[in-house]
Structures are given as structure tokens and as C-alpha cells.
Image (tube, rainbow, N blue to C red; front, side):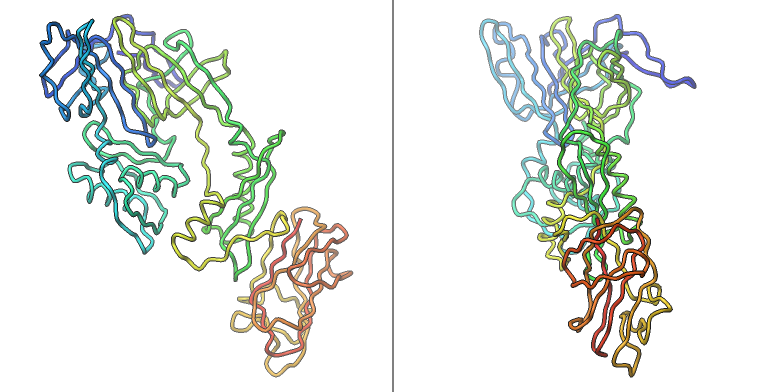
Length: 483
């Protein structure tokens, strides 16, 4: 058996490296070519490409020249015990005959290749859950395949395809999940789709002094951010957002995330601070080489221990390559940490256009840090100091029969001192209103116009005062963008 790791109460126990040579065999159309296999390699991927294999078989005096055909099934077995563990299955797509030495090169691809060949012409015009779309594509375009290992998501989308391959459609679905999910096709033509980092394997590990030969870590600085702004669902047409600063000390771009499941100030604030923690550090990734790891599975999370490179922990394996030649069996692998990313502004707006939804575009023209929104579905924000105004029919408006009045808000307290504010107003007939803002709990006010940036003496206690002069003036919500 190859290197394995066992859980114990004290942590993880790594078993010694294998002392025997792997036992391997190659089958083409169920015929074994065990003694004639000279060398080869197997590469497996998650959602980036199709599995591939290349096997070189001795062809003394042309004994196999006419034996193999494109489309034949090729299976490769290899392990450290009895050679019954399958490391590849697919079909032959190319055959190369070589002389001096006499040998044949068989090139195979995994069953996911069929998804590359089928084109999709299909639209989902009503929101449909992503895993349901994934399964429907398998059922409609890959009838000999199954989808028993496709995880259910909570994301509903509309999407259309006009001539894309099934494989590319699967990739589009992963993009809709912000690439926090991945997929692959196994040797039984069963499709797997699951959240990255959720499948942990103890069958293989890469450990210094045991099976790890080389490892080359790198930090992906592209994953670090200086600030993260999260936009929630607009309230009455007014943008709801919050910006959090990360702990990353060097220059880095800012990140924008959108989640319409976030409907309150506290929700966008919590999400922004969560993402600021994630984006405040670089992502560890790289490549390594180890003694043959036949039980390695793409998409699995394995334990890597390389103290000289300051690597210790669980890492995802998005792809790997087994190579075998004579007595040298090796596994080269890519590894990476997984951070949960959210939808970028660019992808969000692309989705909005594709779905032809009537959504308000994300706005923050003054590049401020956050917004507070006061809707008037009830009288929550109307203070007792107000005169002749009320919340009626989900609007702030004059009381019935009144021709003028004054709204004064209840105090809104900011988390930290504010010096810059922009007032946003959503409603009907709102011209002619007089707006005033205070940052000292109503001690002093400044007259303002909506959609204009103003500087104030630093403060944390907001009050809003509005003078009404017509019964046709109705305010749906007020928004305060601030910095």
C-alpha cells in the first residue's frame, strides 16, 4: 500500500514509505498487457480539463501493430499490493507506432471527453437550482452517464447556451457558484460535483522524510485585497453596502462582492468583515513531487507536511500526474488552499444582463465606506419631535389634511466617527423638500441636497430633518452613504 495517514486522538499518524515496487497492469478491451508495459503517465483533473493517459507498449516484430484501434477501452491498474487499484479508465484517441525501438504509444482520454464533444442549445428562463441544471445536462446530453455524486446547492440562476460544449456549460455553472465548487467524471462515468475543500482523504499524504521528494510552494498575492465592499439587496432602490479594510499590509486591489441574500446593514457589515479576514492573507499554493501515490483522487483534500517550506495542513489537489518508467514511480501534484470567494461585481453585472432582470445597478459614485437605509414601512424612524407626518401606505408623508410638516428621525448611531455623508432619497413627488443632516444628535444641522457629497464635523450620532410643504410629497426610504 502507498503512504497513508491515520487519525488518532493525538492527531495524525503517518505510516512509513512503501518498500516494494508498485504492481501495475494495462488492459485494452479487457486484454492484459502487463509484461509489455514499458512506461507511461496518467494525468487527472477536476474542472479544468479532461483526464489523459499515455502508455508505451513494447511491439517486438510488430506483434501489436494492428491490435489497437481508436475508441478502444483502456484501463490502467497500479498499487503497492496486488495491482488491482484503478488509476485510469477511458478510451484510446490516438495510436503512434515507433521504430527503433519497436513500440506503440497509446494515448487515452477519460470519459469526460464525451462532455467536450456534445453541444448544448438550451435556456433556463426561470430561476433553476444549479445542481438540477447540472443533472439535466448529464441526462439530456450524456445518456450513458450518471450523476449520483452531484451535491445540491442553494443557488438559483437563469442561463442560456447556444452551441457550447457540455463541459463548458459545467464550467459556467461553477462560475455561477463563484468557483467554490468543482466537478469531475469518474471511471464509472458518474459525475461528481461538490464544494471545494469538503472531501478529505486519509488514503494519501505528502510528508517530509517519508514520501515527499520536492515541493515548491508559492503565495498567490493576487488573492490578497486591501478593502472589501459588500453590496446587499437594494432597499427601495437605494444601495445597501459596507466596506471593511483587510490586514494585508502591501498594496493590493480592492474587492467588490454582491449577495442579494443580505438585506440589512448588519448582514452586509458581517459579510464584509468576514471577507476582509479571508482576503487579508495570501493563498498558499504550488506543486510537489512524491513517491507514487496511487490512491490520490482529484478534488480531495490531503495532508501535506513540509517544515522547511513552512507547509503543514490540509490542501486541495486540483490535478496530478502519475509517471511510471522501469523502477521509478512518481506522482506530481498541484496543491492549493481554498478560500470561499463571493461573486465579483463584473460577474454580477454580467448575470444581471443575461437574466434581463430589472435590478438597480450597484452604485457608489463617491466611493464611500457604507450606507444606512431608513425605510418607512412603519414608524420606526419617526421621532416624537416630528410634526404632522406619519408612515402611511409604506411612505413617509404628511398626515391626512395637512399641508406642511416636519420629519425628525430617531437617532442613528454609527460604529465609528463619520465626516462625509451623501443623502439618497427614494419616493414620489419629492421635489421641493428641504433636507438637513446632523452628526451631533440634532444640536446643529446642515442643509443638504440629495446625491451630493458633504463634509461635516466628525460625529457618530445622526439625525435627519425634512420639511414637507405638499401632500403629494411621499418618501419611500432614505439612504445615508458615509465615510
